[in-house]
Image (cartoon, rainbow, N blue to C red):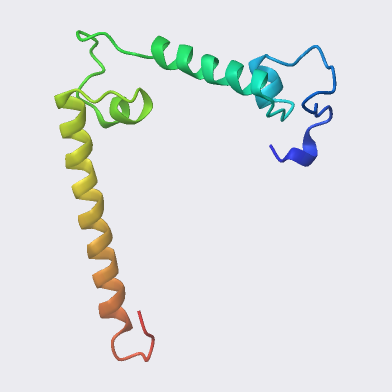
Length: 108
């Protein structure tokens, strides 16, 4: 959401009682120390809540690596495998474009 769409932006030091809450940081655009600390604590709590247990069946998937920031060996290996596949696909697409552009005067 663009900042211009926020109807009630609060400012540091304006005496607004909403200071020091995660919503003041996110929804009202305040960047005072209290609101920044509340947002950091909120993000930390959310990260801890999203931590998967070792026996969770979602391990071993790239989505777990990306969405849950899991860095266990199976999740990391799947992410690496898919990353290699994405790079190879991008290389093939680039080579096809360059091949198609040959002789047409278009530079790749």
